[in-house]
Length: 157
Image (cartoon, rainbow, N blue to C red):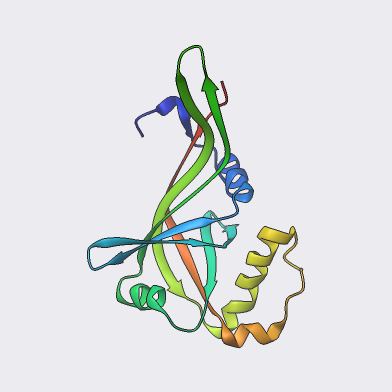
């Protein structure tokens, strides 16, 4: 990381930033080009292992790419605040961001429910938030098992 003064290394702080984000951008390999998708997500940090969960329809380009090459990168950011210093003619942006990479795995039917609960928990504050179980059979759920992660913050001036 070029700006070490902005780097965040504390895992709890990184997880806090992730909880503040509402979109995770997943980058997949599409024949040598990045294919970037904004997705809803859930997280699980257990036993020193960070996993991101996503869901989608039963078919589509994204799933074709994952099946072809499960390596992926991700990015999420939040706390944006444009700062304009008119006297200096200078603009900057305050933000927090998390980036990383890992391997995507399509979950078995038995693994779907706990993962979907993590997704619901991210947006509703509780893993026990009700959702219609009929959606489970119409949904592919996949996990990105995070292998590397970095985080950064640019404080408001």
